[in-house]
Image (cartoon, rainbow, N blue to C red):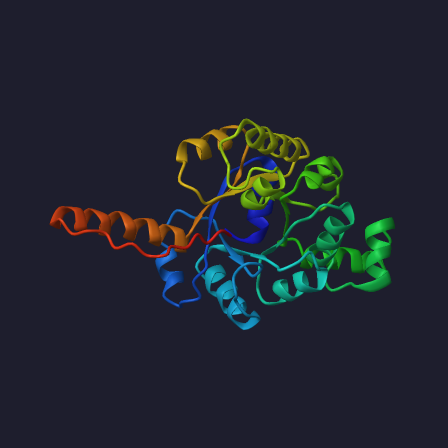
Length: 272
């Protein structure tokens, strides 16, 4: 799947499946190719990956038929154009709460390389330098996927305005930050949390754009329930999480079989 195919799928309600790739190892692209995925999520907000590594990751995953979607560290249009120039098929803006941030993303993804006053005129009044320029920008940027993270109560309150910005392709819930913002950190099974998720899914899908949640905790039944509720941008787990769970399962089984105690160590809880 490429960016244009992903865009079209999101708008018609077709489900697309991806996962977060944290490893910059060159071993991953040929391995990931064998999985039933449509895209990969590359995060530069919470994970330390430099621009050069992101560029080769984007080109490598695009080369094996997986659309690379990159989250930038902040809702900054210049960072978005940098990632698109690096080979990304789409960009995610984190922690968006205002319509003008969505317009910045759409301008960076859909109207590249226009900037400054010319870009503002086009976004605000539909005025392009020429009809030829307008057609060129439409053609050049047809495959760019524009996605925003909804991660707060203010974002939910402004959601109708956010999804109303023309050119937006999908909304992706940042589940951990949203749980904190709701006042119940890491509580993903509460009625309040479920109501918030359904509000986001329903509002986005009613606007004709994709909707998803980055689902990194172990509850496939809940994930299926949200897919049935309208979630069509499925970002399931991470390479790091999958490897950790598999190793934990196998090593715990082996130690128990041999009667060996499990060592107690300080553990981590990486949340992305």
